Image 1 (cartoon, chains in turn cyan, blue):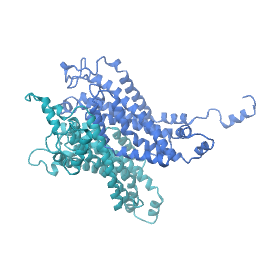
Image 2: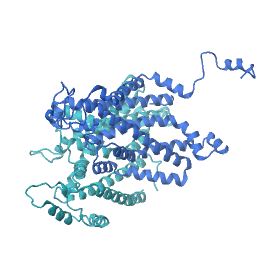
Image 3: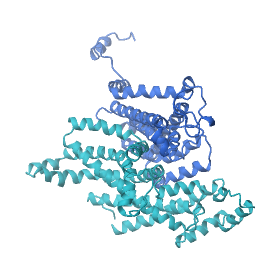
Image 4: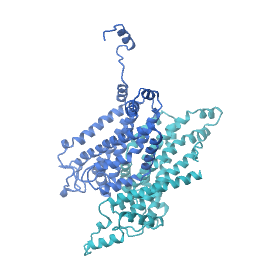
Length: 319
Length: 303
């Protein structure tokens, strides 16, 4: 297991490297740069200022030089300055990662906490009334795009009832910045991601539970007189979870995509919002840093899912 | 025909009157028609397609024209659903917007399925190094932070055309389909009819497309339907953060994007409710059709 993890982590390096090269090229293929946005009538010679700024940022150098220069500084922890925020990129990225982690973990926990038990509940009495009606409801809910759901959530819970803030990641006042405040702001976006996503988990859980319940070893467990609760926890649940973990791994990339869009809708100051702003402002250093971090995040998520896979299913061995 | 009259009665015996033999396609069609939700969905979807393609029949207003003196107008009068904060007529945008959403969904599904069948077929049929190369490439693409690529590309080539967007979305969505198709081909690889075709001297392309493909077409069609629903949702999701179809070109997603402020959400539901509703209904219908097709092609499939 140890060597497997090391090998996978080492395998990530060329992947991340390729991704940085790719994004760097695309980014510079874009017309215009961050300094085109400077429009201040008080500045006399804008062209000269722009030239000066571009020179300072190294934008007048050949492209390969810019990339090598960026890479050299990046690996030593110097991620450069943001062109639009005028602060070191590391200062922007730190809080953004924290906010995104809060939102992402909350959304994932809610998704699983709602989806999996619901699927189990459906599988308890398959083809019954509850199962039938809830299947139709879940199917319809699954078809609601999560951003439409998010808009309705904002409308009902933030604007109409005013229970939750409509945007932002922290509030103002004495409680600003506490964990409670963060969770309070993350709850609405997390819910809008979780509700639609959890329908997928319910479907998978139900199918998987029904599948396992038919297995011979479950009948054996019942036949030898094991009480129903233990049959469920020890045999049905444990084995039924294997496909769910696979689903979790496959879902990780989607989750990151969903997070970026949700952050955009809720103006939640996480990595997604940072990326969107950086791309709009042609803020090269921020684009590169966020790209690398998001790519690493997705790769680590996939790795974690694979490890988790081996944990729930001892038949799977990595060596 | 008249050579052996003796066989005629036998034939009628094997197939009693009123039970004409049915082709698998016909059986699937009948099973599909039996699924009420799917049939209703087809009708609703056809209506949506009709009103977006035939948009000029319902409104004479130009969806790309900004009525600068009449911004934020409530519904009524010339502007059936009012105008948004930029002065665009909402009714015409909702109608014409469907064209872009459906076009992207349809064309991208074709591209994604085309790539998927070609590469997945090659990987599944040949196996070995061909399979390894294609699948490694798939893995790379699956790990790529593609939302970033879409965002960067669409903002670079900041045009209001949809073809770039169609291309970018296709690049992002082909790997899962390719994986799925590869699995299907892999399952059939050792089948006896494939072996028979090989023995008869059929070439690889002929075996792949004339012998194997028809056998998995049902699964592929079902998958294509669900893919189309996902693609439409994906475009709209991008548009909602401002990176989908670019204004003034309308799409349901970018109408929603312009509605995402406190006052519009609170006071002007006619701005965001129709595009949100149309999107949801379209996706719901496509999913129901997919569900119906799955039941039709594979009656043993258990939900």
